[in-house]
Image (tube, rainbow, N blue to C red; front, top):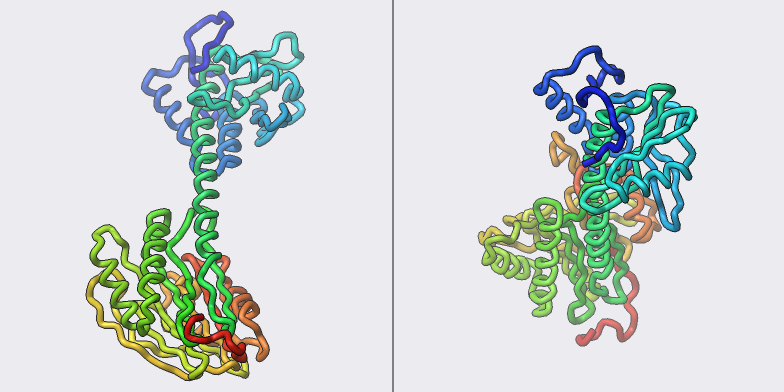
Length: 415
């Protein structure tokens, strides 16, 4: 709470937001409270710190007129004005504002200019002992009243609380985002006879993490298991379940079971945990020696294959229920695969659009053309660009794989 240290005449007043000037008569208490509630509600509408500062200065000018700015203080006492609303020429010099902010923070009250040609006021921008600079206001002639200082202090305290939340959100977002990127960047190593590329794009900037994931597991005799999954929902809870599914997959896959039996065991494991979120999953076991791929799906979209001419088509796969339902019922499908083809696995965020039929979405994917010599990285770049995946409505995970000539001695039983 801001305490004013100068004497004044008359009771404190909250001015109407539309005028920015002193009215001729006092407002009633209920009206003042309602006006204060409305003013505070205009600050902190998002978790964006810059927008909160802009909302603060805009509301300050609406209430008291003149010019308002946020004094931002960085490392080594570097200070500057931000989110300026009004005429910047009215603002006092940054050194004065910096000294006033320190004085006001120490005294827990507003600091005003004395002897300046124009009145200026600095209110601490702080909450619960966390300082974030100051709110600096200035105008042409009329000095700031104690009531105005009190009001500006409340607005600044509201903004500081939201700035604190925004910075905490950004900190947690960075930690969890780095964690998921680390997890997604470290899939198992495929065999040397298989080129694999993986890409993950989270939805927008407001979501911390999601439940989309890709994995590769080396099996015996030169075979590799390729997996893409999508845990229902977003956020940290979905990411936690995603890591649980990945851990279970790696353990189950070590038994070298066919894809449909891997899904059955994953489903049994997940359904035994009441809090585990359901997930869709597609597994492809690539066998370069036989030139084939065996697929199994748990509620997931089918994979695509690109032929030697750069044409893409979908591979039909029997679709079982999502993992975690305990229903089982997964079936395999096997297709030929040679080095001239590229296998593409993806999550639904790549193709789906709200209100659009999924068949139409998949047809749009199948219509993408590729260069005949495109490598796995080029394939993913083309798919993401043509489908505008960076503006997708959901998380996107894509895996592309190509066979190439077998490396002698690299695909024995023990590799």
